[in-house]
Length: 138
Length: 241
Image (cartoon, rainbow over all chains, first blue to last red; front, top):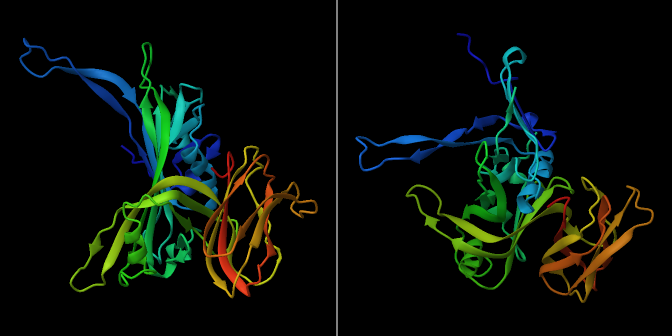
């Protein structure tokens, strides 16, 4: 099966701003809550799937542009969640997840870190975008 | 291209500890508050309260007053308000800068590897403010500063922080103003407030109402001093924070 390289094949937008030009790391943290339904008559642990949850860890070389996009929402979180679009893969086989922002569905920045670890190295950023609700997949 | 770490400036109240700083990390977080309900197709969450920590690592140069370790230790668990600011890129004005207000140190370990320099790391807690640098450096005359362009105009005011780190001579009511205008030429600027000072330290200016997209500082009065060295960070609600 053909491999898929990351270069040129990741797109991520937050509140209408495309971030992939500021990113060199992307991690899609999709999970499903595990619900425990073990009872006394169970012969083994019984578990089942609960609600899915979604978050993204992204990061890259820092710039004023990315700071202008992310920092305000971290200091003053919005009441209306943001529209987030995450796309993985080449155009012929792209998987796109879209959350259209409302008061219940959408994304918000749950962490934004700016680091200058090395006096001679680049300043970098990383953020976690936590999603609420289910996406539309295409 | 990203700025290098060495382009930053670290200010703690009236002290500039940039040359003793080797790294910084500003961690801003927003609590995720569960809001799950029946009929939800997936987990629901809302953003809760924001918070911030600034972690700084630097070189130990002694524990006296005025040293990086001495001043940070003075603020370890302190209830007296302090301000700490990280100006990310001092190569030009108009670059992002963050201030932790009512800052205090929650953690201050020293490391002494046998064959290396003694270093310190400090974690500052405080209330985060994000803005742009409008002034950073020595001021030797009155006049208008460089015009900085905000991403947009703001309508909910904001806060300006003036970090005065040295005064040559004696200043009595030296004055620095913040102005804004709707055009970059600033032909009819609006005065958003003035900070007066006579000593080193940090001064706040509460700004109300509209802050137009083009802003600058104006040095109104040196107060009799030959010069002073200061940084001003303008934080505009709904725009830079």
